[in-house]
Image (cartoon, rainbow, N blue to C red):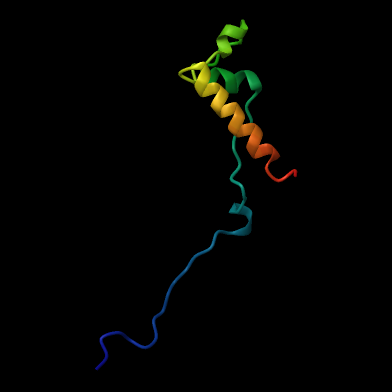
Length: 76
């Protein structure tokens, strides 16, 4: 006798058409509500946008040279 039956009944359920929506509906929030939920603050000066991404001017120059070369690699 086989350990597994030859026919296996699988019960599946699907949502009723009125229950199915893709993508799922989300409540509509105003811009102000979204910003408040993220606790964002307005940008008051360019200093608010500064970031210490590169440790030195040399590292920045290397990045810019690499970026320039990559953008123009297939142009020739």
